[in-house]
Length: 159
Ligand code: ZN
Image (cartoon, rainbow, N blue to C red; front, side):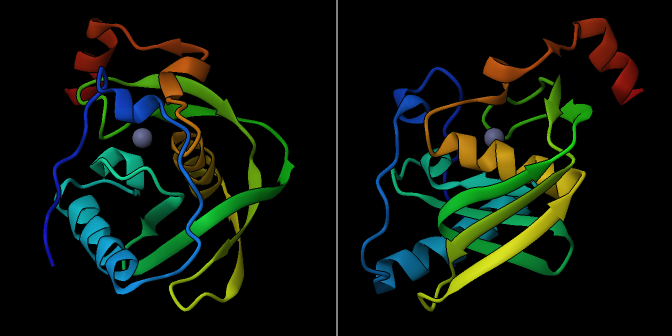
């Protein structure tokens, strides 16, 4: 178990397209464990492998405490509706934006045992699926945000 360093905006790693995982090796399993530790230590609800400097299609999500989703080679297979909401990212500390995402998202991925799994999410979980999967293609939420919050708005949010 280890906490990894989170890559911040400006680093090229965040702009690369990640490669799929072909074989789930012990190293990949270790990475999953470390990513969960790192996400929790940073108080995040999701983390993608490029955010810890690894260009592989791996995401961990914990929107509901204690319910960790580990997604290897994830794909969005269904979306429904629209949902405008606040979004942040561990790689863009101190920033927030308003982003329109689908209200419902279904993803298909491999779990750590190499089994195909499907997860459905609404609202925050749907948002999280979109945000984290975007990371795997080098996309950040600030690229797709309706707008970023101003300093005053962020202060109001904190207060
Ligand atoms: Zn992010």
